[in-house]
Length: 262
Image 1 (cartoon, rainbow, N blue to C red):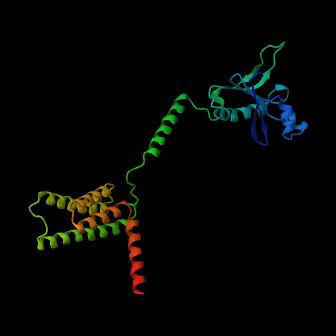
Image 2: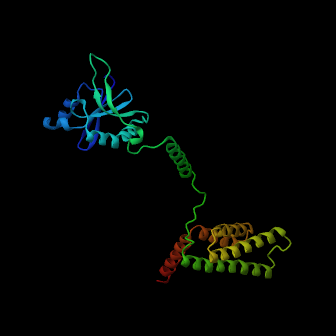
Image 3: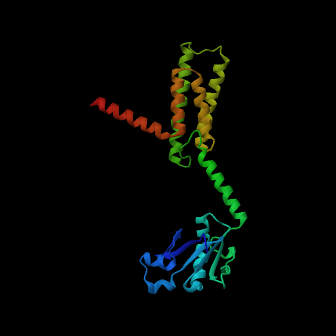
């Protein structure tokens, strides 16, 4: 009976006692228990890779079996000892012979029992969850494509941005500031236009790839290295990620203009 851990059910909880000279009765009384209640208290030992539940005289009844069935796996998990056996009652033996449990419960009968296959699946699922939690997306898109009001607003907003981009090109052509001999510029203008058109169509059709079309339009706008296009690209990028950026900026501008008028 060396190297054992005592446990006792006290006020609905399982308490553990290790490296103590007290037995169960002394421990129970030190906790404030009444001697007349002691015989009906479920207690036990954890020793020799066994979790043994019993009541008075090291015996067990149906209540002990039910409790062991419910709590056996929980104690195993707490001890990180899934291979321990859950038992009820102890046969103290004779003349110093080894104490042995009377009843050994089948693992399959314990509440919360899981096969090795189930445990392996849970482990794999936990690893996948950990991998997903540590790998966050580079950009988190927050617009709700399921909201018809957002899609309608987004379509109009993108049309306005596209119109500003086209107007800027017309002005640049009239002022002869658009580098017409640069094929790179034509390619960027093409990507910008296609990006905006696909974004508008995407908002209308509720396409999941709409955000990527918006990014293409913004990147192409940046590389045109024109002030108007850069502003259009930046506004479109912020709107594509989260419309609240633009809404909050608009509200702030309105407040500032209102203050100036006063």
